[in-house]
Length: 253
Length: 253
Image (cartoon, rainbow over all chains, first blue to last red; front, side, top):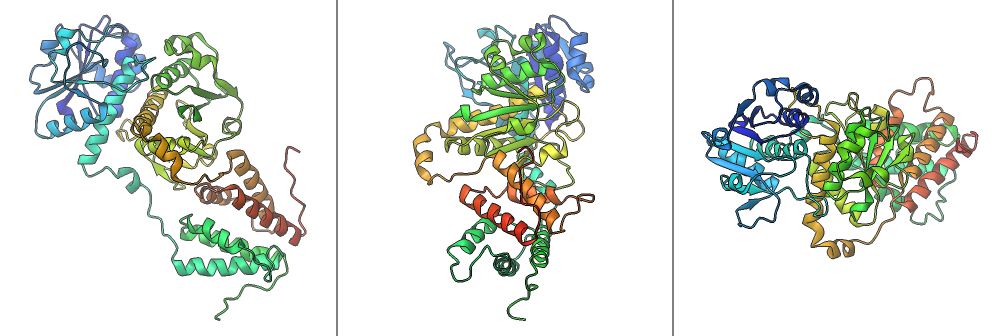
């Protein structure tokens, strides 16, 4: 589905930025790059910044007009500064990512269009876009590097794609399942902890203050798993041995 | 509020990436850059890629250890590939942005930590982080350019900040302020804990296994406050006395 989404760079001056854009795209699973009248391409600087994304550069299509770059597209989004004279439907990158993926899933062809390093897209070019996308930047320093702008939009496309793939939780799923301890294991731990604190003389059973309550609050919110619990219990057992205290025995045994 | 969020780059090889990171930060309204042992800095390549963000470079703090870079921080997030042997609390960039802004709004100091261009962060460095952040990338081409990674996280911080900006007053009034301990206090605690575990014979310095890493993970995610820390330190001190161990002294004293 991501192959339906192309990145179009218009009038790029610095070939290094083309390489950086290619790398950002490939990192996020995008592969189709179209270059409208690049100043220098191919170029060693593009290869260097692309790192392992040379396949994206090799597959890049070079054309001479934006019109050619957009052939077949049903949805075109162009990056833009905010204050344009002609008001236009405006999206933030997150909305652009979601909309791109929704349309791409229908088999449509989508273009994300990025302008020149210093001058952006012309008004005429912007008027060929269905939507303008503004990356929210600090108004006092608002112009992103071209490859950085491609990174942000490609990232939002990927986030939206992962969400629709039902893989939004991919990160969470990747973690091996953690076996959290049960509440009764926690109670045994608190009992053992209390006995140990008495052994080492830190807790006076006649003046317990709120010590155990504070420790319960701390450990209670820590979502302790079984391997961690066995470490904590091991520490308590060794502490009791070191203190020559009574070995821990559960009260009900 | 964004000034409470610092970007930490560890062992950067290419000064151009430092400049690119500075530009990405400033575009998103971040200004505090800390460099841990950069290979070359200051450097003309950094200045060139920073474009108008030379103030971020000029204000950058250069230190020799990650520990120094994290002084004063109560929340540390480190970027990481996904498959680590020791599972760790994992966030995607969006969650990291939201959490950073929530904590920064409480007046806390936050660090976003980025590793070396080729090798990332070491396991030891990752264990100093409360959370790991994984930028969801194509598994077949997963390594982002350093400045691009800084761009993605800074962008998510800005998106979260823009979302809460209108609610700033509410956030501050919301919860009573808890005085969380700083990273340097946590390091002193881990040092004390390790010494104590050796005293009681639970930790064999010659065969440490992953014991301290597991304990760092447990206590690191527990958001310990100052009164809890003084209890934990008191327990360690009494345990050492009970074990007739050496009283704890900080290594650097």
